[in-house]
Structure formats: C-alpha cells, structure tokens
Image (cartoon, rainbow, N blue to C red):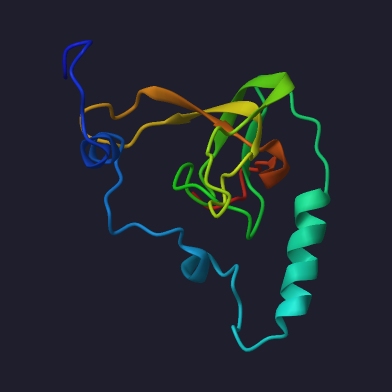
Amino acid sequence: MPEKNDKITARELLSRIGLDDNIGYGLEDAGFIGDINEDLSIILKQRYQTFTKKYKFMPGDIVTWKPGLQDRRLPRYGQPAVVMEVLTNPILDPENESGSPYFHQRLDIILGIIAEGEAVRGELITFYFDSRRFQPWSSGDKI
C-alpha cells in the first residue's frame, strides 16, 4: 500500500479494486441494448421511463443499477450496493467540460460496494452516484 502522501495512477487504482482497461459497461452482455436496428426512439422512451421512475432509498437499503442506466464501471450490473447515505442537498459533479456525461451530474446518494481487487479484496469502498439510476436489489438479480 502506498504511504499517505504517495500518489498512484488511475490504472493502479483500477487494478486494486478489481478492474482493468479492458472492462466495458457490459450493456451488450447484460442484454440492455437489444437489437441495434430497433427504432431508437422506442429505446430512448423506455430509458426515460426507467430513469424517471422514483424510489425512496434509506441508509442500509440494497440497490443495483436500473437496466440500461449504468454510467460508471462500478458497481457492475447485478452487483448489489448498500446505501450509506442519502444526501439532502445533492452535489453537482464538478466536471467542467460540457461534453462530458458527468457535466453537473446530480450526485445525491453514497453507495458502498465490496472491492474485488487483490490489494483491497473484500473491503467496503464508497462512491457518490445519481440515485435516479438505481433500483432496489432483489436476491433474484444476477451477480
């Protein structure tokens, strides 16, 4: 482990939590894209409806990505996460490039997941997310 003031690269951090550069979002494998020849307006309407469906989360709730709305590498599709905190006042992602999908993204929930990387395997790590992208997890969801 690096010392408190040592800097590590993004690649090294990803490796420590069990990810590498070759990992994608897995939309095709997860079955969320469907036939790319479908009318994209139908897919867009479905994603909009999924995105706007509201859930009220509480600390301790177990959640997972809504289908087709994963915008980060972690947690993976079907991987459960625990709600650590629901923020009363959302934080806006400080990304200052308007071409980024994270530009002023509303971060209103802190989720904890179990790290998969060799150096930190089994440790609880936390990240900020937009809660509109999550739904309650059920034991029937694939891991």
